[in-house]
Image (cartoon, rainbow, N blue to C red):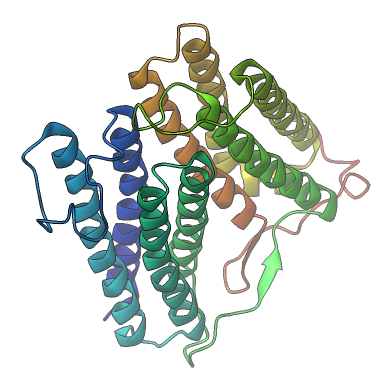
Length: 312
């Protein structure tokens, strides 16, 4: 298998992982979380039961898990058949393949606990972890190697201070995702009328979530301002940081709009999709701070070494 073909397979796995987050949100937002009351069977009589609308929606989401597993297994097989062979690609493909069925087990816990909000929270956060791992696999699949089964050493594309700011954005974005799951767990869309909710006022957790989001965007704006005088760092981060800013602002706008309009299900679904996209952009931004050594990049800059670089 050629490197280009393997990368396409890895991208397909990433797309599938992204898509199942959205279909999972659709299950909750349509009140279909307990459309199937058992796992892996839909109920105690049938493995597949689409006789009710809620059951059909939940069943479609479960069956799509099979599509995800096919894509992930294909990525693992591709990593072993790829030529030249790459140990790091095999490792990341296996990590994704191991993590994906764990998501199914967490889904079973969600059903057996009647949509306990803590279990639902872990279901989403594990999805973000898997999306991140899949993004790393895609990124590395597009990089050069030494031809002997080893990835090339990675070198920094930005200075230390810039890398630290990017890491801060990554950590804060992760915290924003976590705080967002508490808002979801306290909100009206539990997935079923009888599902428990977090015993906290949604206004309280929404404020905490909003503050976290605004702080994250503020750090990103500060990085944008700083990069005006760092041409090499700006070149390395321009595209991923611009993508991150667009998604973050859109996500914040949708979040505030849904909150002040009674949390309509459609906007919540868009919010979930944007949150997943934002996390994917965050991983890409973090990965852009280093690159395989064979790919030529300008030397990274710190503020001290860039004092003579004109603003552009």
